[in-house]
Amino acid sequence: MKVSRNELLQLCQKVFQALGFPAGADKDAAQMVSWLDTHQLPGTRLLHNELPLLLATASQPATITAQSVTKTILDGHGQSALLIAPNAIDMASANICATDDGQVTIVLSGCRSPLFAIALPLLRVTIPRCFQIHWQQEGQRYDFLVDAAKLSFFYADLDALLDDVVCDLSVTCARGSSYDLAAVLSDERGSPTIDAAEFASRAQASQLYGIEVGDAVWNELVELSRQILVAATPESRVRGAGASGSDND
Image 1 (tube, rainbow, N blue to C red):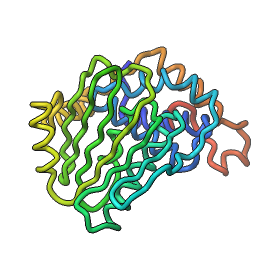
Image 2: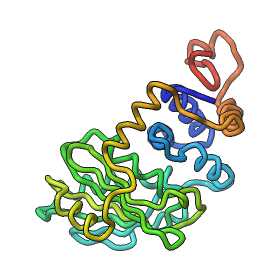
Image 3: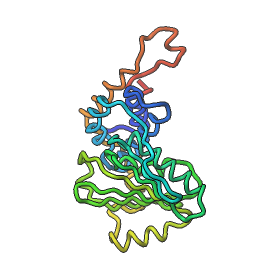
């Protein structure tokens, strides 16, 4: 079925509220999923794979295991990037402001479904920064680069994006130009699998024609979102009770 980005975003935020995500974290997670699907990457399909563990496991914050001026290592306790990647991105942004060095790195060990994290640098409103997000899974290397102008480049084996793995996610934040990071990636990886022009084209197509979401996945998300509903009474409506899958219902 075809849905708009706004419909998908609203539904996902309700799903994460039903899953018990803290306020703010539900919005971050919904934006990560919808950003991926908007750019024709498997956001909702990856979320479908994640749901059994998200439903069964209590969340806990990532904890610092080692720290220096330019590098911090966090233990993600095997949790989804939906829960723990925002902390790594925000910490990288904060640490680059607190040091005179040209770049800082946050390593998030024990991170599940790292693909979700690539949306975050593009969703954060910050002063110009360059980000490189890197991980390895199933013997494949993944690199995502966002320059200061928020143009993005993805170096990846797209066939393995839905593999259920726990790995180490590395976030490097640099001041100013992305030239140095881009030059290294270009030497090591060649041309990106998805460049900035292709990302823009995919986003435009989603805006014009809608986002394709599997019927079974959509119905599963709608059913889960209903857990946040309350009985329709005058008091509940005053307090903001509304629709289920879409606020247009």
